Amino acid sequence: MIHPTEQISAYLDGELRGSERSQLMDHLSRCGKCSVELEQMQFVRSAVRSLPVLELPEGLIPQADPVVVPLRRHKGMWAGVAAAVVVAAIALAAIVTPPADEVSLQQLNSLVGARSTLDPAFGPAKVSISPLVGE
Amino acid sequence: MESIPLTWEEVARVYGRKIYNFAYRLTGNPDDAHDLVQEVLLRVHRGLSNYQPGSFEGWLWRITRNAFLDDVRRQKRRPTAPLPDEVDRWSRASTESADTEYARISLGDDIQKALLELPIDFREAVVLCDVVGLSYEEISQAVAVPIGTVRSRIHRGRKILKELLT
Image (cartoon, rainbow over all chains, first blue to last red; front, side, top):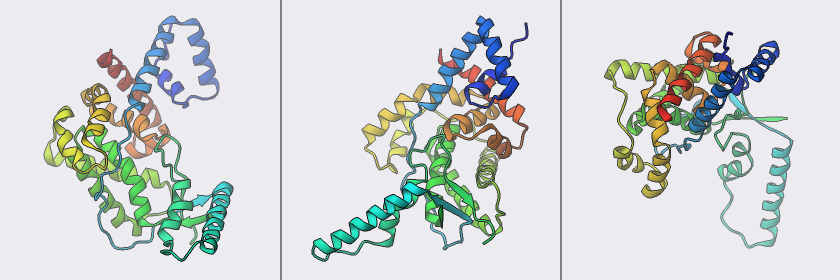
């Protein structure tokens, strides 16, 4: 019997499709050796993925001249709704509270913009960023 | 759906964090990770004016990998030392307390040590997959090898890790 062992990690990673996937699943249902290997690979994969995510130390981003970044972030419907709610809250606060320090554009961006789509949890989920095309 | 141009600061922060985690897990050394992030961000900043719209991630990870390999060639770096001795140096730049950071690092200490035992090609593939979260296609582009090779390296890397961890 040929054991398709290298397909096991691909299967765990969601990288196996179609007939290749169904053939492996069929094989796993009949092969104790490969079933054990599946469990072992699952253990190792989970172990590596359990490593703590390290925060970027302060001061690591080099000071650089402003540059045009050919990327955009997309704001989906909920980000738009969230933005509207925050803007409304800020407007309301401005009406009902005494004048205070102005909310900077950067603060506003941090509330409604990038963090809503820029993968704050740093996981396998993809960052919603796309190249700037045609501009 | 509205789209907004990203600032350099945003790009550097988001990808800098990913590069830092990649470099740290690959080298096991916070100082090397520190240097690599700065070098890559400088190369990315310099390259943005010539960047052609396409796979930004692929482009970025090619730069990261090339910078890492350049560093290895320059220093003839050995697989680096275990982590606890490094904690003092690492925590100086961290926003968390030293105790908290030490606990976090110790938790993954065995796994980190095992990663450093892997041949570099396998380690790189496993880290890009399981730490950075790239797909096989993205790893294939970054490392410039066929997807079948990526699949093989990840699986063989995990098999070695299994032997080291059990």
